[in-house]
Image (tube, rainbow, N blue to C red; front, side, top):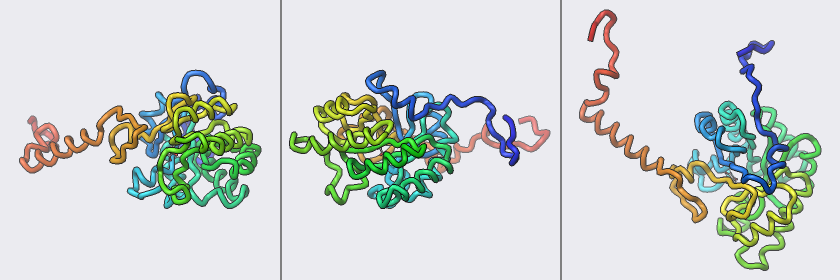
Length: 283
Ligand code: KIV
């Protein structure tokens, strides 16, 4: 550890944190591994396995019980962004810009994206939208803010789209989504999240754009994958078709809490080994 002029302890080891450029260079290579993270201990566990950690606005639903992402504000994203950055050493940390913080103008987007980066230490922001957001993506990218795009199913547009159903399941729905992805990539996004689309469309989009396409519910045809960590760990009740549960942590937590409650009621916890003794006592 060393100390800054302000007396803040900093870790002197050089961090080998991935950058947006590193992620962009992974197009067509080994698939890019991404997960969401909202808190330090989880970020620390995910970090060594992931190329990118997304502080998703899904935090509103997963941690705060909201029924959509629309109520999440920038301060919440910044608080969780800081927590994740404390736990991440090598993965690129990306902060989701929440609904209402970037759509109004490119200047509004810059102001809020700059806060998201400067107040957390993250390396990029994510925003939802296709052709209509291309000018904003270009404005941010040209001013030092790496942008991860997000097209296809866009949860912040749930009211406009009328739900979370998969997109592109008939060919006549394909072109607008392909055009959206191309527009965002050409505007300078270092990668694009493609959510909730049928496999042949995911393949087309991945072939059509220069930057990596990171799929969620978008088949194996993409350059990488992202999931909400709590979904794949079995910690979140909603279980869409595209989620594979790699663990059942929710069930394990219930078993553990049941065991604790039982032992407390039977007075078998705390046991001797969990109990402080008086100094000098030999038991
Ligand atoms: O908010 C989020 O977690 C996301 C991912 C699901 C891509 O946008």
